[in-house]
Image (cartoon, rainbow, N blue to C red):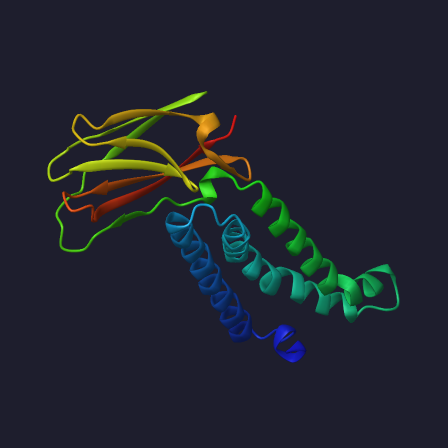
Amino acid sequence: MLSIYYANTPIWKLLKSGALVMLGLFCWAGGNLFLSYHPEATWLNYLVAYGALLVFYGPFTHLVVVPLAIRWRRRDKDMLNKLSKRMSKINITFFIILVIVVGTYPPSVMMLEFDVANEGVDVDPDLDCVDHSEVVECELSDDTGIAQVVVTSGERELVVLDEPPYEFEIQKDDMVESVGQKRFVVELRDEDGGMLRRYSRSVPAN
């Protein structure tokens, strides 16, 4: 593993960088997708943070940090030579600290929002929400084919609408907080109670 880590030919640098970018994108998108189904699973924020940071930090490590460490090791016994022997540990430690910090306080740009639909059912309204500091107001652009709207946050059922217009407001204090963000889920259901579409949304806690 160390020989691969320190492989410094152009093709190896590109292969390692490309593999880490793909792994990062997979973790980033996959973590966000699972969060859309399970918004209460706050540990997934660290998986999302790991993936998002790896997309940039992976190529930076193998295109900049590793070649620099190899170059400094060839120098005489000076400060840079001593630093190069610890550079990989410092680099990995710094990356882990970044993942912990970003996972604990995730920026909104890192969190993707997925709308989960029931295949075969043509129900696709837009869910428009406005954050009014203490209250979030939402409405659907179209109510065709929808028999019920249920809004939940964690295990809490906040709003149930059985007839249009499907407009509602929810207090932020009633939502479950996850690392600085308030999360809620909106489910559209048919007459039999089956899910037509599911929206996962988040707003800043303050």
